[in-house]
Image (cartoon, rainbow, N blue to C red; front, side):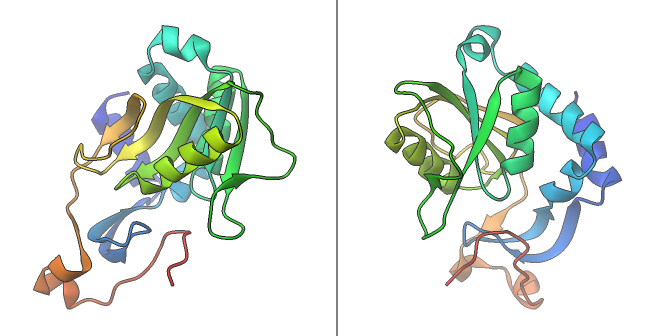
Length: 194
C-alpha cells in the first residue's frame, strides 16, 4: 500500500481528527488518529495488517513466533497481525499501572515476539510493553505500528517497522502554541492520566 492509499483508509473511516488533543504520551496535538475507527471494519483491518506484515523483512518475519500488543489501542491490530502472519496474538495490559501478561497468556523462555502498536508518538508504551514481554521470558525481535508520528525519534532496542510515518507536530504542555491552547484539549486515548 502507498501512503496515499493508507491515508485514504483513515479518511474513509473518519479516523483522522482535527482539534486540540492531549495524547496518551502527555503531549498535545492538533491532529489525532483514532485507530479504533480505522480498525472497526474487519476487511480494512486485515488489509492494513497485511500491508504492515509485508514491511517486515521475510527472514525476520519467519523467526517470529507470537505477536504481543499493548491494550487497549494495540489489541485489534495485534490480533490482525497474528492473522496476517499465521501465528498467535496476545496482549499486555496495565491492571495496576504496569504492563503484564494476564488472562492465561504466557510465553516460552526465549520465544521470539513481534510487538505491535497502533500509533507510536514517543515510544513509551512500546518500550514498557517490551519490558513486560522480557519479564515474561519472551524476546522481542522487532516492533511495528500502523502509524509512526514520532518524527523518527522513537527509540527501540529492536528494528521498528511502521506502516506509515506522519509528521503531525506534537507539543510538550509548556510549548503548546497559543492558537491551539485557545481550544480546550480532549483526551481521546485509552490511557488514563492522573
